[in-house]
Amino acid sequence: MVSKTQETQLNRLENQVDNGGGGAWEYLCLVRMLKVRRSEKVLKYGLSILNDPKKRSALGPEEWTLYEQVAIAAMDCQCLDVAKDCIKVLQKKFPESKRVGRLNGMLLEAKGSWAEAEKAYSSLLEDNPLDQVIHKRRVSMSKAQGNISGAIELLNKYLEIFMADHEAWRELAEIYASLQMYKQAAFCYEELILSQPTVPLYHLAYADVLYTLGGLENLQTAKKYYASTIDLTGGKNTRALFGICLCTSAIAQVSKGRNKEDKESPELHSLAATALEKDYKQRASDKLGLLTSALRSLKT
Image 1 (cartoon, helix red, strand yellow):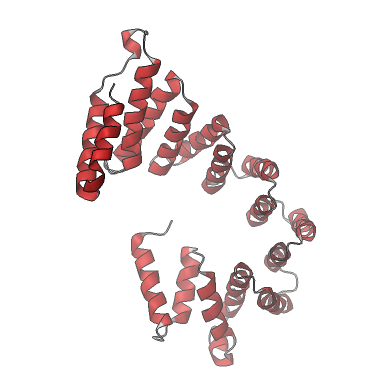
Image 2: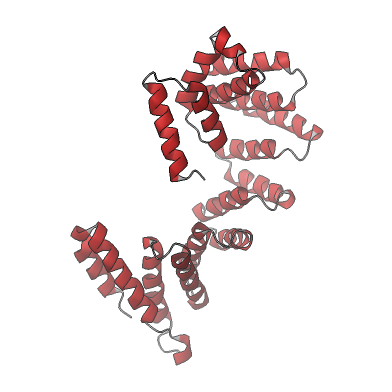
C-alpha cells in the first residue's frame, strides 16, 4: 500500500517531468518500486528513453527492466504493437527466459487469445509449478472472461500452496462477498485477521460480512470487530462507528423476549453515536440533522 508521503513524492516528480524539468528515469523507477499503475505516463516517458540511443545505453543492465515495464504499460494502453516490439527485444536478449514467456502470455491475454494464453501459462507451470505470477495471471484471465467459478477454483488451489498470500485471501473474500457467499467470505477474512491482526480494513470487512449474515451470535461478533476497528484507527473510522449503532439496534430487535444476559448495554452505542455527531459537526455540519434522525431511529 502506497503511503501519503510516497504518493505526494510520486505526484511531485510526475509534475516535474510533465513540465519538462527532467527526472523521467527517476519517475519510472519510483513507479516500479511503489508497484503502481500509471501506464500512460510510463509508456510516454519509457519510450522517450528507449527511442534515444544515448539515454538507453546509459541505463546499463536496467535497459531490460525498462523494456519489460514499457511492454506491460503498452498492454494496459492497448498499444499492442509497442508491447510486441519490446517483448521481441527481450526474447532476443533472453531466449530461454521464463519471465519473457510470461510477458508473451500477457500479450496473448491482451489480444483476447484466451486459449493460447492458457496453453502458454500451462507450459510455463510445467517447468515451474511454484510460479506465483503465472498462477495469478490465470485467475485474472478467468475473471476477465467472466468465469468467476473458475477464478474461485484457481484461487483456492493457489492458496493451498501459498497460504500466506494476503492479497489472494482478500481477493477471494471479495469475490465470495460479491456472490453473496458470506460464510465463505467470513472464513477468508478470519484467515487474514489471524495473519495480520493489526490491519483495520480486515476487521471492518469481517464485521460487515457478519452483520450481513445476521443472527444474534454473528451480530454480537460483528459489534466486537467494529469496536476493534475503531480501536485500531484511533476512533476515526466512521463506517465502524455506524456499524456499532446498527449492530446494537439489530441485537436489541433479535433479543426481544430473551433473557437479560442476551441483551447488551447501550453504553457503546451511546459512545459511538456521540463520536459520530462530533465528527459530523466538524466535517459535514449540513448533514448533522440527517445523522441525528437516523440515530434516533436506531434507539435501543
